[in-house]
Image (tube, rainbow, N blue to C red; front, top):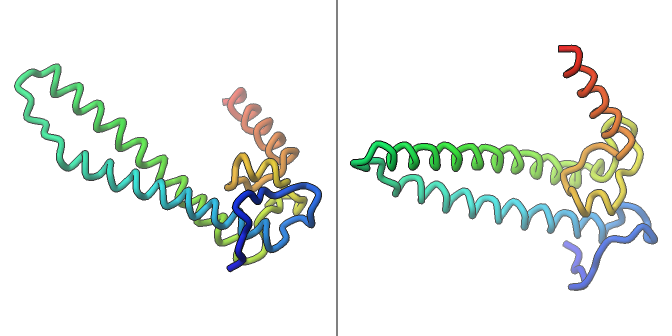
Length: 138
């Protein structure tokens, strides 16, 4: 493991996906996953402790809706954790930071904003245009 300076941020001026950048994104992804898992554990505990034996039908319905929303949020977190794990796998196999469609660099600023990104901006835009076209045809 490389020791990163506390104020290190990847830059377009350095060699793309050098050891420091890879370590930076690896740590960022691991911290993000750790925080998501903590939140999921807290939410699960809260769900298990919540009683649905409200006398009032409206109160019970409100609690059921809150639980359904919490479960949906946990499902989104689970999907995000899968994307984080896939990004960590790409760091290990040397493909992280490169577009899965074109092989072009995704860019450190895009990865800083979305560390699980798999497509460069151009490929992402094409993907979104195809989706819009498919939706309008359906």
